Picture 1 (cartoon, rainbow, N blue to C red):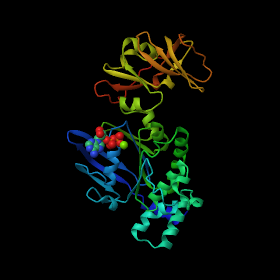
Picture 2 (tube, protein in one colour; picture 1 turned 90 degrees about the vertical axis):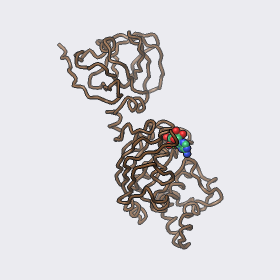
Picture 3 (tube, helix red, strand yellow; picture 1 turned 120 degrees about the vertical axis):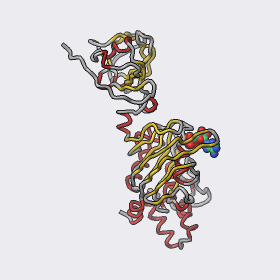
Picture 4 (cartoon, rainbow, N blue to C red; picture 1 turned 135 degrees about the vertical axis):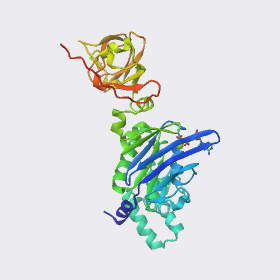
Length: 364
Ligand SMILES: Nc1ncnc2c1ncn2[C@@H]1O[C@H](COP(=O)(O)OP(=O)(O)O)[C@@H](O)[C@H]1O
Ligand SMILES: [Mg+2]
């Protein structure tokens, strides 16, 4: 492994936020955020537009000041340090490359500012270019590069300073769907090569699920859940997370006598009142033999499977994802069934997940 990569790995530091609060006037943007990030982790901050993702990142980088709370990077307390003393490097959505400079000069610019001699600069730039696979593009101008290559220049320019933390704010947002997917894979590979602590902001759940070691989900400046992608999918901590992660989204409905007939392997009294039940479209079973009748109202054919909207006898509508080869048409009456082990339960007042001891009736 190159010296640069070893050095970046050694520089990677954990980040700890404690009781971070931020308001603009009466608008509370960050409620009370405490999180611990490990050195070398790839963290994604996910949430809808305006939920405080960029603000959180800017507070870590020092581009914005929090109203209260502490920030540690490694064992340094940094909330009062100016940005350049924090050891963070940022990659932005528009890459912010210097259009009239070559790739080499773009990557090496911060070293020039630091006063590094030409020869040393050249060596570092060449090493970085190798890491981001731009070795043969050093003399090109940004206009002569693809979107993906420009993104790599921006990353090269960030890692040349051997930062403790790499910060990305929606860097893939203005790319088309195919390029986004390619860049996701590239970023993921780059991260495992570089090994820096990385924080990546996005509103795109697919980016979050595919890139992150752990995801921070924010909702209106409030932390909904901080966990691995699989935990977030399997055990969403709130109805917000349940609804935000997964495509199509989880079905959420009130537990009532009419909805409980679809859960006929459960003893009805085991579910408390004031409960919201969730089931993912891909976990609803379509069955000939058991389950209750519903009517197919609408259908989206996605090739590999269909997403069907069905109407329950109670009038509620649910999304059901079909398996390959299941033949269904609009206005069909189909039987559906919710397997007990695939159900999620939430408290209707707090919207928080609750675990219920399910009593399952044994088939005779
Ligand atoms: N400089 C500012 N002055 C006033 N309000 C701001 C400022 N920056 C951000 N906000 C508000 O803070 C909230 C969170 O913004 P931001 O962190 O940029 O959201 P996100 O990145 O999740 O889309 C928004 O309601 C936004 O309008
Ligand atoms: Mg933002």
